[in-house]
Length: 252
Image (cartoon, rainbow, N blue to C red):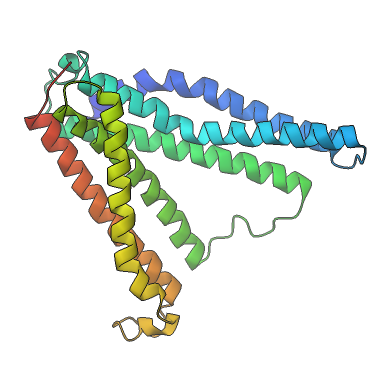
């Protein structure tokens, strides 16, 4: 059943992302064009045009990176908190399977969008300058990439949980979802600071004092503790979302 849910979610969302990736390709081409035309120009007009177009391109990349969260949160809200949810929850699958399918679909599009933006940036900077080693994978870089993946996953589940918690209110659910999202993010930051601050104040070699291997750096220790925090919050958010959608469903 999970496969059917994923197939349905993919068919319902790919139409949103194909135009987005066309825009990304256009932004990449525009970046090349603006760089080729203006990077060696010294006139005031050229500098202004270069600066303004660069700002537009940066804002375009930012919008593309944020688009999956906006598009998919809108779809999640529409299919779980409005009358469309009657169709969502009448499929022959339990709530956690439906939720997991939506999560995997959102994770796929969010990661793919991030990877394509990074490839666009890599291609552009490869053309304009030397960034040797950008794709070299060492131990710390692998940890960094894993932390990005976990951050994307946690962001998706934070959105899902905030929207699910909005089932507790009858009116102004969009505003309630934003409020819950802000509250959840604040809780995450407080817990992260409380857990991480004592370790960050220690010297890196204090990892040994915490029972770590002598070759285990303080940076790696911080990464792993951050992973643990993200995983714990992700599991908690999934369970909360599943409970709210299963036990507290209150459709508009």
